[in-house]
Length: 163
Image 1 (cartoon, one colour):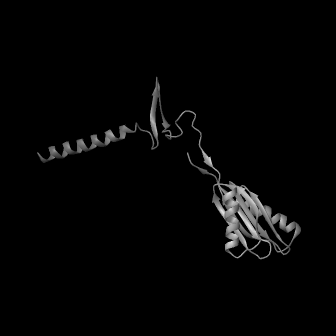
Image 2 (cartoon, helix red, strand yellow):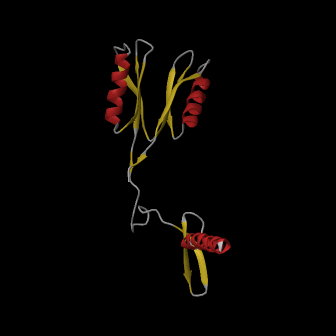
Image 3 (tube, rainbow, N blue to C red):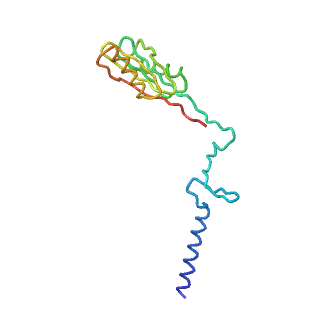
């Protein structure tokens, strides 16, 4: 009698697992079965946003700016802000907080990267899509006109998907 209960329990357990396996239709995670006359396949489950007809992602720009003081070696910056005006205002304010008295914006960029490269004779500012590209362009310019060139500052502000 005990063997009978064990067999029934084992059968019920196996039937429960078989039902779970059939729920996915034999497709890997993230896919569901699709079939037609004489064919069957698995297709990706669409993202609810991307499944809407005519859906286009919405991106917001992100800005940054660098400001320096023309008298003292002070650098002010802003990163990942919503507009060029906010970026420039914040960079100047940051420069002034550090003791700058004649701060001016040297570079702004949206959805990209900036670098500040310093050499013996001066400083240059470059913007590019990536941090490496901005730093490389700044170093190339500096080395063509100056010596002892080093990246003093670099940062990136990339667009943000909002929908």
